[in-house]
Amino acid sequence: MSTPRRFGKTISVSMFAAAMMFACPNMELSIYSTCKRISQKLLRNIVKFMELIFLELKLPPYKVVRMNQEEVHVAGNEGQGDLRVINSYPSKIGTIAHENEPLYTSPVLPENKGCWPSCMLRHC
Figure 1 (cartoon, rainbow, N blue to C red):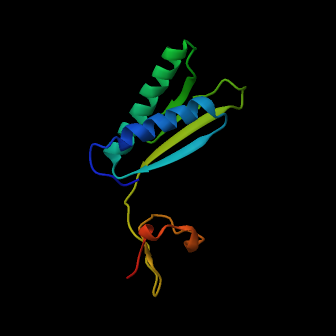
Figure 2 (tube, rainbow, N blue to C red; figure 1 turned 120 degrees about the vertical axis):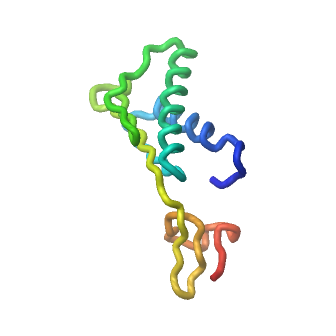
Figure 3 (tube, rainbow, N blue to C red; figure 1 turned 135 degrees about the horizontal axis):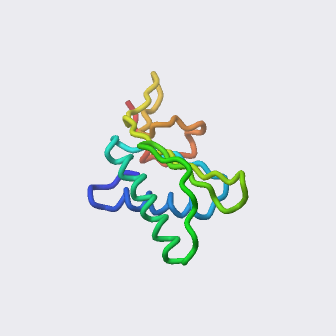
């Protein structure tokens, strides 16, 4: 996602991740941020939004099994094996270039270049 500052990217991703963690049993979600500060802020926001979800719905909160600077593990309510994990990693966003190939602005090289919009491609 690429928009100017103050467009709510971090908050939107945090809300989405909290909703996923609340609703999806046995889920694992990895988020790659531009720097360590933002990746840690994302995790703090996710925990805050989870607390708000449980408070608003008047439900007992899920138990946080493990939390550190890069991940949150929560025991869900769907049985003993229901572990919900969110990873938030700082990453260096770069580009991938191949000789005589378009330059992709995505950190992941897509398998089918034809399905990507032309705005995602830039020729060398």
